[in-house]
Amino acid sequence: MPPDLIHLQIAAHPAGLKQIRDMAAKVSAAAGLPENEAGSVILAINEACANIIKHCCRDHPDRCIDITMALDGACLSVTLVDNGTPFDIGSIKPRDIHDIKPGGLGVHIIRQVMDLVEYSHTPEGLNQVRLVKKLKN
Image 1 (tube, helix red, strand yellow):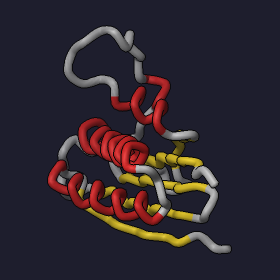
Image 2 (cartoon, helix red, strand yellow; image 1 turned 90 degrees about the horizontal axis):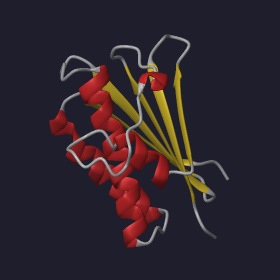
Image 3 (spheres, one colour; image 1 turned 135 degrees about the horizontal axis):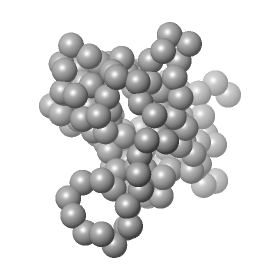
């Protein structure tokens, strides 16, 4: 069965995060995720987009994020592509989870919630993040 695809393009600005969360909520509901798990997936997607806005696009509204969500019955896949500054996940220095201070845990949250997280670049040199959540049958 081909996956159901939803595509959205937003300006790389924090104001677009609500639209992304709303879309993620609808897809999570369609996937049949329990409310607490859906909330975690929505949070992970929001964190990934917030990181793109803050670190790659630096709040430039002329830059954008393309979001594609696919639901194929076995998993929920989210692909985020942005035209911001090239990003190297290896440059992120993890900090101790017990070091309590604002910010800095987005990548940790994303990796804890999602079953697969891949950072890459498209052939055109755009940043790409792929998030996958396996669905329980």
